[in-house]
Image (cartoon, rainbow, N blue to C red; front, top):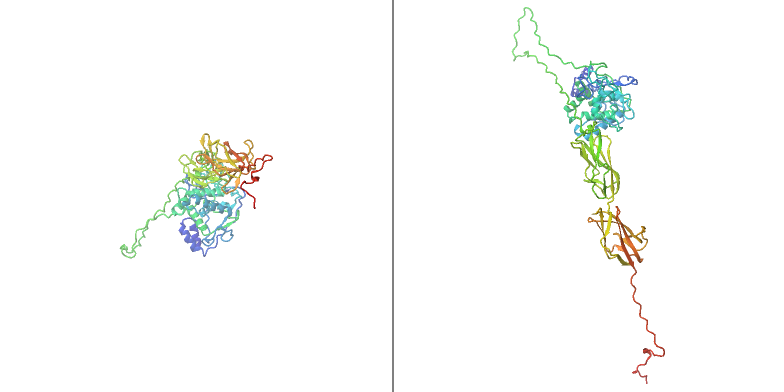
Length: 603
């Protein structure tokens, strides 16, 4: 009984639901399927493919409907439902083991596409199911350290005998055949399909169908085309049929998807079972098809000589012969819609259009914003592409909303312009980087620079020199106007230094100083012009010091503006001394020595 059901399953005539029921019924009685002896693949390219129904061309099919591997999974559950698929286990059915690099590529593609197209609901097990029937998981994980199949994997020449007829489209670049095309790589893309959907998922600068990372990413995007939601059975079926237009192919892939969903484990690269059991039996055009029974005409038994002719029974009596039921035609699967390529997948490069080196001054907005064009391989603009702009480097410049990243969608001309950029107070260089969301294309980098605000002229508004005595503060207000090319220059950082000479740039070591807000003093400070372009030194903030003399405040602005403020420090005034008595003439008597005429001696 088990063998009978197994043969039916391998004919591919059961649905995914029947497959699941058969698995449940036989799981307790059927031993794990024996893994066939590996064959030697070191002699050259391994021919594999995908398909079951002959097609006059490769249109609407990723693989040109080339042959695929028909071996079905064993009916033993690999692990308990929900078991981890990331553990480096080596137990369970051998067919549940997926080579590490191949497994990594499937998971990476799932994560990437779920981040850019979450509505597709792509499961990595679908990529694993297709990878199993297309190439036996890259010939059992025979890939190099970069994930490239070694030897490369090629399908048979698509000569129309049992599969599509596709004459050469790539000049042999991918498949080495300059006469006919062949399916290429672990996911078996024909060259014309790869030219549209090829990816560089491992960022090595090449789109290689023989690389499992590139091929898995491309396969995921292809399956998600036409806004499919793979959580829906109808969309899932259409996605698989768009890869190879065969009902048997669909059932085979679904059986592996269900198998991997029940659990799997990683195995070392190159240790997986080599694929066996191709749909064309290794030859051309004789792939099995499920037999559809033809309706037969009802037969009437010949009467026995001498026997009484029986009366036809009434329809209401037992034994009534009902008219034969004409078998219904098997459901016809509608042809898969040609995949619609996502906008991001069409982009071959981002080109810098304008403002390659945007500049501004501190606290100001950039007037020239970075702009890029999304172009396809022929140089045509691609609209509807999400472009991510990112500020990279040590800077306090921000986009208008205050962040360091922003996403812009290209318009009908394929152009995307960065949102408004405003510089902070930090000067220096940094990078504005533009990339295509969900792709690993080269970035477009803009070299941005923030410089100090400038003033090419500083002018005193009052010309009188300032004066104070030692130990006091200057009581006058100092006001200077900053202009740049004749316009008022607000926000300019002006350096103020106390010097002893207009020709000596060195800071004075004595005399006046500035009083800071925290009460400390300094002879060099930075002052900022206001919104009106004026710089003001308030009374009491410039101290005279304890050394009398002539000093200067040298004011210098970025851009060359310079002026001086004269400072005079004097000593405090001293009090007048007591007057000295005039000398008395010789021989005269001082008034104080002359006796009073009224004085009389004592009796």
